[in-house]
Structures are given as C-alpha cells and as structure tokens.
Length: 286
Length: 271
Image (cartoon, rainbow over all chains, first blue to last red; front, side, top):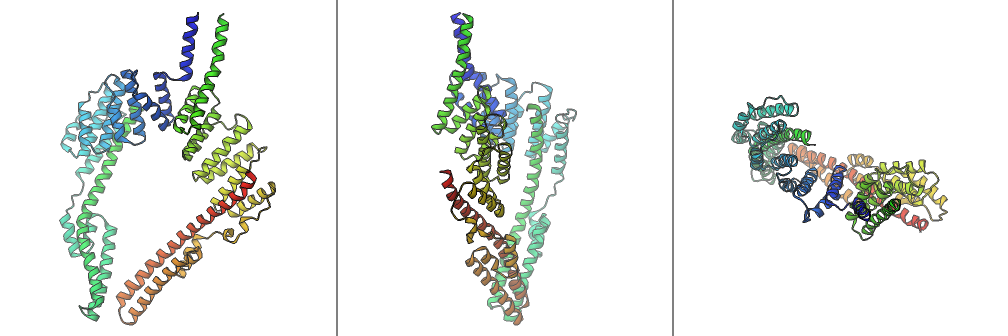
C-alpha cells in the first residue's frame, strides 16, 4: 500500500509540476497552437539539450521549433530545425521536408529545394501529388521549362487538394513563355531619338511621359537662352547643362528600365508560383 | 487506511498549485518575465488556478517587457464577469492601460466605458485620469475638459485647470494650415507655430514669383513660365503639405505637454 501511495504521489507530482519531457512537449504544442511563440520557443529550447531526450522526442522538439520559426517567417532558422527531424518520425519528417523545401524555394535557394524534393520518396498518393506540384513550382521558379514540361504528363489535375494550384502553375507557365522580350538597346535608341520614349517602350509609361515633358521644358529654356543671349550666356549654359544631364540620364535609365520592368514581372510571377506551392502544403499538413 | 491516503493526496494538490504559482510570482519579482510568462501559461494549461488572475499576472510581465499590444490581447482571454469586483476592475483597468500604451485609443475608451457600465460601484482616479488622457490623445479636448472638471470636483482639487492656459486652449487645424499656406505662402507654418519655416517658405516663393515676373518683363517667357511659375507651383504645394504636417506635429506636442500637466495635478490625488 505504501508503494502504491508513493507511485500515486510521484504521478501527482509530475502531473502538477509538468516537468516530464512528454508533458513538456504537450505543453509546448499547446503554446504553439495558442500562438504563444516566445513562450513555446523558451520551453523547447530548454528541452533541446536534455540528455534524457529520446530520438522521437528530439524530433518533436525540432519539428515544433521549425513550425514556430516558420510561422514567425524566420525561414533560415526554421529550415535548420526542419532538417534536424530524423526519419524515425515518418509523418513529422514528411511535413518537415516539404516545408523545408518550400522555405528554400522562398529564400531563392532553388537547387536545395529541388534536391530535397527529388530525394524524397512519398509514402502515399497525396504526398506524391504534392511532391509533383512542389517540383513543378520549383522548375518554374528556376525557369527550367524543359523539366516542367517533363512533369506535365504526370500532372492530371484529378486530386482536389492540388488541382487548382496545378492549373494556376500552368497559367504561370504560359505567362512565362509569352512574356514580352524587350531589348535594352531598343530602349536606348528610342530615348536617344525622343527623351523618355525608351521608358515608355519598357512599360514605364507614366515615367516616359514625365521625362519627355521635363526634357522639353529644360530644352525650351536652353533654346530661349541661346536665342536671346548667345551660347556663352549663363542662362544658356545653366539650362543646357541641366538638359544634357537629364538627356544622358534618361538614355541610361531607359536601358535600366527594361531590366527593372522585367524583374518586376518576374517577381509577380514568382510570388504567384510560391503562393500556389504554399496553399496545398497548408491544406495537407495543417 | 485507503481513505487516509486519499485525503493526504488531495491535500497535497493545493500545496503544489501554490508552489507553482509562487515559482511564477518569484520569477516575475526577479524580473525574469519570459520565464514567469511560461509558468503562468503552464498553470493556465493545467487548469489549476483562477485563469483571470493568471492572465492578469501574465499581462504584467508583458507590460514590463513593453509588449503592450500582446498584454492587451492576453487580457482579452479573461472572463471579465468572473472573480471579485477588484479583480474584474484590474482586468478592465489593465486592458485600458495597455490599449492606451499601444496607441489604440478607441479600444482604451471602450474598456473604460465597459468598466463604468459593469462596475459602477468602483470609482478609480486612475481610470478617470486614463479617460481624460485618452480623450486628449484623440484631440477631443472639449469632452476631456468636461471630464477633467468632474475629476477636480470629485477629488476636491484646488489647482487651476490646464485647459484654461492659452497654450492648451486650442489645437491647430491642419486643414486650415494647409489652406492658409496655399493662399499666403508661409502663413500656415506661422499659424502652426513655426515662424522660421514660415519666413523661409515665404522668401523662396516670393523669390520665384519675382524671378517669373522679371523673366516675363524681359521677354524670357519659357524661363518665366517653367522655372518661375513651375517651381513656385511646386513649392506652394509642398509648403502647404508641410504646413499640414507641422500643425499635426504641434498638436502632438501640445497634447503631450497637456497630459504631463494633468499627470502632475492628478499625482496629488493618487498620492
């Protein structure tokens, strides 16, 4: 009877004190669900270095920390924890790999993201679809259209979890292939002929018109100074200098505008691809 | 015999709860706020103590760490209708205070109104003071003045009202400052209480108009129109927007000074 009492007391002590590792993990999970990230990180960090931690428990610690940092958008540190989850915990590992790969893609480490997805063997059909979708997204982000095409045959848009995103990725593929290819040299030539025309051609129409008007205003004043006071007048020198600076700047800016516009378009497409890669991950794992 | 052991076990439980609460409280006293927050959350998770009290204590930790918004949200997890009147009052007061400190003045006033409605028996100078300061922050000076007068009467204060002082009497109207600077360059800045900037703005714009006039008279029509008039137009618009910004800045300064005055006066009551 005394032994029983001792056991009950130990159980009660542990229950109230909450010091046992598995209970601490449950507590950390509760904090994570309640979005008390700072508190959860503190609890998990104090557990992380305990020698008594079993492999599965260690995996749970890394898995929770990975999730916390992911939710806080601290992706680099989130990857470290997701990658520390061992293969012992199958379901946790699957989620960790998918989120780690997505985080790599988000951080523009596309080769790492691709490697993680290619090396991963899915355990069921849902994971298989998800893997295909993630790989398609990564190939589009890499602008590796050949590899994307090779996956096209495997994507049949029959799974409700990924079908919408698969269609969206196809649409992004079309956008990439039909993206207008504008030449910086053309922009330079146009701006040399008519100030601002190169920017207009690059797609920055407002800036093109604005630059043309400012150039015209300065040019007219320089002409006026030349006409009334001659080429050595202060008025002419001041306005013509301003005009020349703007003219040269516009030519250089036009070439740059083509690159900026292209980057902007690519950024928009990439954001949409990442969005489409993220939605099914949340649906499947959260 | 078994009965005896069971009694022992159940008597032990309150001891452990107390020990756990004591641990959290001692961490808070030692300034280890994050650890204290964890322990309060643990008690909440285990459901061993009054949640309202624990949430209040957790909010104290967050307030000490200047995480006012988080403290406000933590308090909103509490059941405001449970517990003693004094505990309920603390929940309302701390919610209002944290809302004030995080700049959410509407939420602060809401909590104060709720307290007045649900706990009419409790009158606290702290809450009244917070209401006056919040109304000031919302630039609702007339209502703040009324509340201040009620506060003075209720607490038998004899000091003169800061609202009668010339510097606090009227706030600047940013729209008016903007319109004034459009019509008469620099006047909006003067009205906002920045004479140096007003004079500079006036000098620049007057110079541009003069340049435009002289250019036109000498037949430099393009220079007069584009440099003189064009730049005048730009400076006029920019100056007007600047006057709007300066009036808002002045108002913030006035309110900070006014609230400091009120705090000084109210400290007599709170002492």
